[in-house]
Length: 273
Image (cartoon, rainbow, N blue to C red; front, side):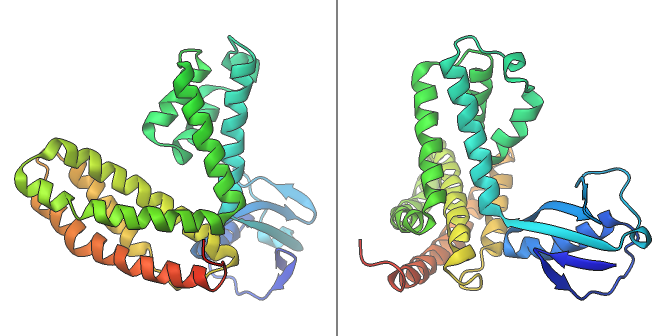
């Protein structure tokens, strides 16, 4: 069998792969490190569904072609889809899921993968004609703003750099608030911090696709710390000491390094704002 990935002929050695799905899993494990995903596949020019329950056996395939795309394209497509849902419902008052020919189960996974829990609920309310106008308008602007970031990731990265600088000052106040025992605003602050950091990561990774070095910043440790923060917040006992330590001794020093690295990379590509 001859294997092509994005029209490039690949040399490979089979291990335990017996069918096309086995090969796709192996390829996916490799390309996800470069923030890409498998877009579509053909076996002897016949399209193969990525979730097929009956994948072709490798000994029956002469030519397997795998086409990939950067995760940025997937983000853009999902946001466009959500914006279209909103517009259709706004233009056609009383539109139902039946009119859209989509079920809540079709839309919910996409919304929850791209939006906050609160914004996902607004999408669900829109589908059921329950959302209020200010909430719809605010969400529309937010999605349009995110789409603009995807269209021009360098400008978005510069904007997020300013956000990161502001966020750094904000994070420095959280341990102080914890020590004072004022925990109610702390939880809200930490949630906001996590969401902003995730946004910064996504935008930076869009830039690495075309402009920056993937090795410049290792976000894997940050992902681990953000998960730890979320676990702490979900625990009824709320380990405030651990929460404070992660922010003060890990997130803040890391953020200081990112500001320098991202600023240096932007300076080599963009003129000063």
